Amino acid sequence: MLANVLVKTLRDQSRTLLAWAVSLALIVAMYAAVWPAVQSQPSISGFIDQMPEAFRSLFATSSADMSTPTGYIQVELMSFMGPIAVLIYAVSAGAGAIGGEEDRHTMDLLLSNPVGRGRVVVDKFAAMALGTFLLAAVMGVSLVLEGSLVDMVLPPDKVAAAMLHLALLGVVFGSLALALSAATGRTGLSRGIPAVLAVLAYIVNALAPLVDAFDRIHQVSPFFQYIGHDPLRQGTAWDSVLVSAATIAVFVALAVAGFRRRDVAG
Image (cartoon, rainbow, N blue to C red; front, side, top):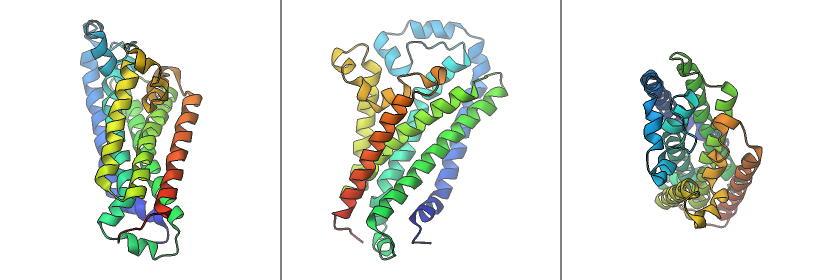
């Protein structure tokens, strides 16, 4: 079993993944339960429109219409809570992939098996990515099924597109955490740097329409690749998918290179 790092990692994370999946389904259920009350109060959209533009850019979208299921979910889930949940999981999984093994003093046991360091990194990445996509899928299925119970009807194809972009956002920062973990073996650093960069990327993308300096660079923000093309309304933006995939590939390659040239603590 130790020789199959991917299976071992998924097995080790199974309880954590189950807890995350149940939590996300309950979060969606909470938003679904509130929807009938929001739907009956069209003045909420007017309230959002009256917010200062900077505040609205940070916590809503310019085209938010809370009287529609898509606008409601865009504001309440997809602009803030959904990304936070997925990023916390992905960054934690990426940071703990290598550094966690060293903290538990199990890395020497893992490497004593017939597996190369590159295989360890790739399998750890695959486990993190599969977990992230699984959680995004749970959120998407919950939106469609739970939403249908309260007349919060969302197009399944658009929900799938939004979940694809959300999962890729998580995997981008999870891969960065993995690269830092592989290069340093320090889980705290590997969590902290991606968390700070995620906040900065969010702010740059949100305030780009208001700040000229941000407007010139916001298209490189992972949050622009996630939500800049409004996948919940427009569907999958394949150019953004390719940019995210390329970014992930670079981080995984850096993780492999960093782990191969480092002395590993037991």
